[in-house]
Image (cartoon, rainbow, N blue to C red; front, side):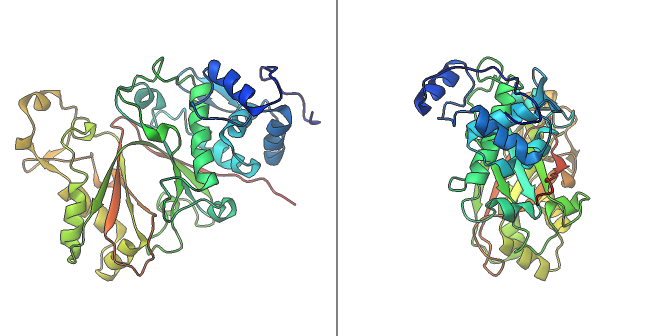
Length: 354
């Protein structure tokens, strides 16, 4: 036990073997179905001691049930997910966003649509935690990406009560509800980082929380830049997306460092690229059925076209993935957002370590 107090989480006695803890927690509905690290008192205290905060300090309230996300409760879920103690500051900052009205976890978390909590990390902490911003950054292979993303979803489930089927009413589910966390490649980008664009200092470390949905991978070897961009804008133009009925949310396009070079050399800023994609990601109004026209909730229509968002700024451009700034960009990944959710960025506060 630490000198800071006692843990108050429910204690369960199980045989001293990992399988027993996993089975017990699974039966209680407190896992994501994958094996977990047993959250023993010693492991939980290592997490708490790293951040130097009282275990009963409330970091935030987690929808849907608005459970108290204490430092201890966050630490328990972090252990289960396989996190290292130094990942705790990222999780604490991410938890601070979950009850933000704009993020609207209750709305997209209980919808029949397919969305999960995604984290985008910026700043110096990326290197210290070995967060992947390069090849396979949206996939497996990096402990920090995998376990931080997993922990925030366990927190939503175990503290917020966002249980699959019981509360989470999604028709199909979403693999990103297991884990979705990556870093932005700031070093190879010709653009300012996402967090700087959002008003933070370059030396700050931040986490951006985003309601992520379906992926659209686009590949285009077209050499002419604007034709290339037009083809990738088409990856945004999904007729059935909620964005074209109720365009209140945001979406993300992940681009390679090479795109920042070729656009910069062509005299295009990040905002220029965003506005081009927004304009060419619109769909002719004539393509939508009449029933869709009746159900539209404030969608933006100009010159006979329906736009994917209320404004171009609702498309977040994030630099990551395989490829150097010198390579020719061929690929993008478009991540459809929730029509009722807006991303939130928070400062990550790291403890002063001697």
